[in-house]
Image 1 (cartoon, rainbow, N blue to C red):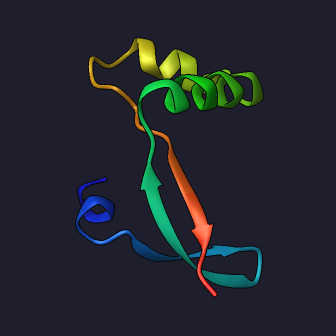
Image 2: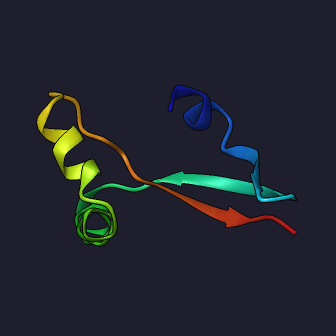
Amino acid sequence: MLNLRADPQAEVQVGGRRRRVCARIVDGAEKAALWERLTRYYSGWAHYQTLTHRSIPPVVLTPVD
């Protein structure tokens, strides 16, 4: 996470396709809404959150043209 805070420009690969992205760490009301959606999709995130005291920060990736 510290790497993305220092430099939000990144590259991701999904399948055989690579894309440049800009990462944005979300918090506040946006985090709450996104966290609800994420834990509905995969309940393991909610369980993992119970095992740690730190807050798990969701990251939004925006494609860079």
